[in-house]
Image (cartoon, rainbow, N blue to C red; front, side, top):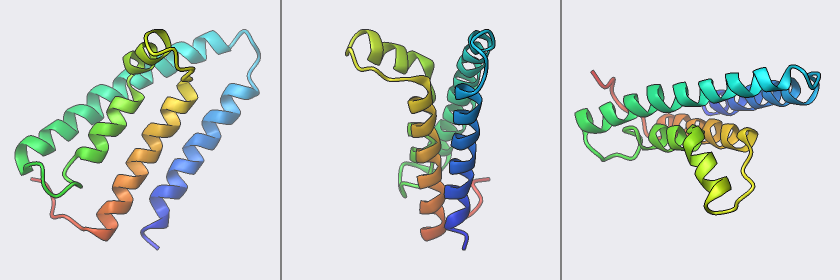
Length: 121
């Protein structure tokens, strides 16, 4: 049963985000876009910093030591999305970045239930 919780969490967050972006009036969408960009940077810095800290403290092996969180932070970074849109000409939306970040965190939580680790500190 512990395996299902991260997937349900990610699905709920993504569903709420989809509802908020599709059913808001057009005047509220720029404010939501700014809030999403701030949240993306916060996710990138906080989760990415924590993941790097885990990797420095515990080493690169096993893969659950922060790799999933680090990849999630990179997926949520607004700079990565902007580079993909402008340089690689890939139509990546903020919702897709958010979905990828939640999916990677869910995979990491799933991996922790399969390969449990001791507390990092």
